[in-house]
Length: 203
Image (cartoon, rainbow, N blue to C red):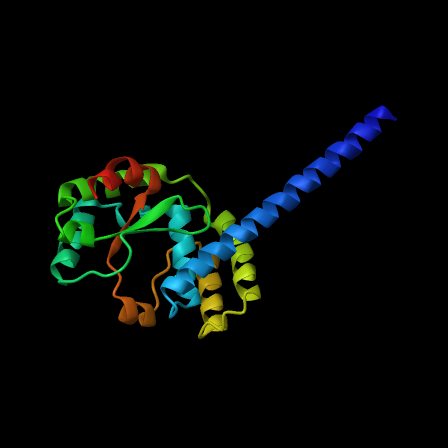
């Protein structure tokens, strides 16, 4: 009897942990979505998806070729004169990475070489995850976003496009056209740990 009593208590303990984890996850997702919508009210589901997938996968998808990534960054820096927005914004619900505004290079506060080195090394902060597991997590995230009733434009079409992409084993998403036109984003994804230890003291 004692054995069964212990197993029952253990089972209840596990259920309580799962309930707490679910509550904390939902709270963190809601806060991340609210933060994005407050800063970028014209965001679509595509833009929210990009925020969450960046938190999971970091910058790895765009720096498999460091030479090409460096050339692209230099071209982007030369393509505009002003860069607005926060210096560093957390990604997703865990905040593993930050979107660091390229204005820190433009203003001379951080050198190109220091910034690019931090950007490249941020790949080391990525925890391996399969697209299939990410798809399951995204489905949980999307259900929370849907419950928030944000009246995002083209929601169902964007939702299907994202799911179709994940079904093909692809996870990379892009900002919506309206986001690009409204906010002209210029940033790179950098590990929170690297930013706080190496870049933040320079600002």
